[in-house]
Length: 128
Length: 196
Image 1 (cartoon, rainbow over the protein chains, first blue to last red):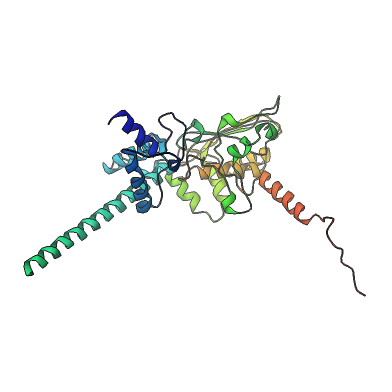
Image 2: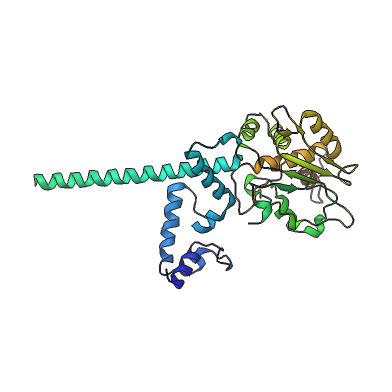
């Protein structure tokens, strides 16, 4: 990604991880790839109930998120006793699981509806 | 994110009404550090417990409580208790790594460590909690326990995660002052007379 485009994206996420002062997203002019971030933020807020407060790269740097992802990966292998882990990390992991399941369910429903629409259209063309 | 707002690490926690803390010198940082409980839920603000914001009275040292994050089964045991105060005390008994109490909050300087329990993990038993309560008052234990409990839950990380409990001495004193202000007669008050 070109440097101006990368800056536009970072600015659009309203995140201070590039070292610049944090500014409200509406106060800045969004251009290039940055303009698509607004749609992403709105989509995430609509799907999950909360709009992100930082860019995705910053979220991965959050210690709770990092530990929750690590715990999730180890938990899938069955190598972790969840009760003995920090409560906040377990809660974050369950939140990530819940969010992913919700998004996958929405995607699956959209895919099912698309196929159903295609099937009806094909059927209508065959009859016509 | 500064070190103290990382809820997966140990937290060095002070009490809001410790006389060693210079509230005037802290100014607005006092609310940023300890949080704020308003008249309504919407007015409540989380404190970030950032150690860098603390200012001390010259020549005084604040009592410090070192808290570790609660484990999942410990949180579950706290959640099973009926009242907020009992949850805070249970959370404190699990989370306390050491308490470095000293005057002026306590009448003597001492470092208190939790004893190892039958399962091999250190925790404060009832006797130790009673002793700590005699040293620093029950309000201090409620406040520190509330921090220990609150930082085990997902919250607004950017703003901090430790609210000041409504039972803290600071909040109660402020509420009493507020009630006193409400009931104070003003010059516009009219006296009631018996129409006998």
